[in-house]
Structure formats: structure tokens, C-alpha cells
Length: 209
Image (cartoon, rainbow, N blue to C red; front, side):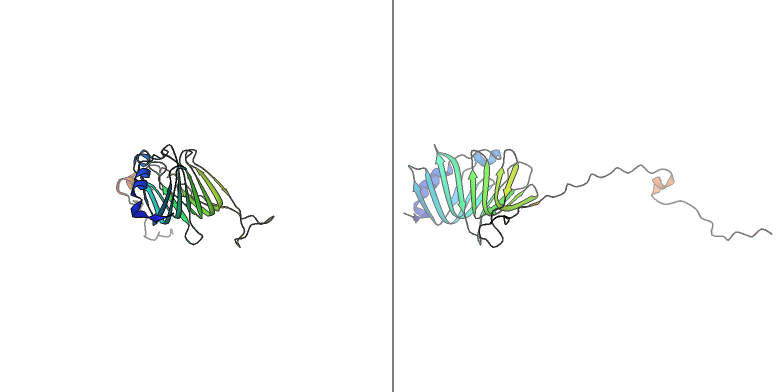
């Protein structure tokens, strides 16, 4: 039975102390905050379900969804399942490695495996990682190995794909900036003042008799 979120401060407090597998050191050391319109707690199963404009934050980790399922074992976060829709997909972002941009993903469903440090995005899935973009029906991102596995699944009509109709994946890889070639040092007077000191005689040459 769902209750108003202001009555569930106790369950929210329990989740605030749940550690998450290390991404950035600051992330798993930060407290977890979950905002929602409704919540349901099953202590025996170690499951908490949040519904309605759900926002989970912990350090650089942020998950937004219509529905969020949290699974805990021995007060440790095992898995978070965020559900959205085609019009309002679930969203994930986190700075996986220091000094690199945020990794972002969205899809109709996002599985966040805390201990394995993996993210599985399903349904019109898209992932942005270190400037590169991946899109497909299913995407698996391994944060430890920094590998992305993408696969197609449906055709453009949204119906299950038949033989030969499997949706293609799309990968956009940003080029690396070319290394600047060193210029040879200039010599002579031109090197001193940056001007061309060549002289030209504009007096017409006299014809020889």
C-alpha cells in the first residue's frame, strides 16, 4: 500500500546510509537522497519502490524516472531499476572517472548494478560516454572495463523485428584533435622583425645599343 512520502522519512533515512560500489570516491561516501510522490517498503524482501517524479542523487550519480525499484542486501545497494516511458524515458548520469565528462544514458528502463558497476539500458537506449554516443534497443556499459555493448531489437514501427528487420545500432565516435606540427625556426632578418626584406628594382632596364 502506497503512502505519502512525508510519512516515509524513516525508510528514506535507511537508504541514505546505503553504500554504493565505488565510482568516484566522493560518490559512494556521499549520502543517498531519493525524492518521490509515493513509496512502498518491504523490509523482509529488502525492496523499496518509489513512484512519481522519482529523483535519486548520490554524489555525481543522478537517476530520474517515473518508477524506481531499489534492491538491498545486508544494507548494501545491489540493484536499482528505473522505469520510464517512450515520451518520458528514465535517465542516468554519473562522473565515472575523475577528470572526464559525465556519462549519461536514457531509455524506457535502466538497470543499475552497483556491485558489478554495470548499467543496462533498454528501450530506445542511448548512451553518451567520454564524448562518444551509442544508440540501440539495448546497451550494456561496464564502468570498470569502460566497454559498451549495444544491440538492436525492433524495427522503426516499434513492433518486434522479424527476420532481416533487426534494428541497427548507431555509434558516433568523436575524432581526436590532431597533434600540432612543429614549425621550423625562421632565419635571417625575417626572423628578427617578421617582415619580408627582399628588394625589387622597379626602374626599367635600359636597352643596350
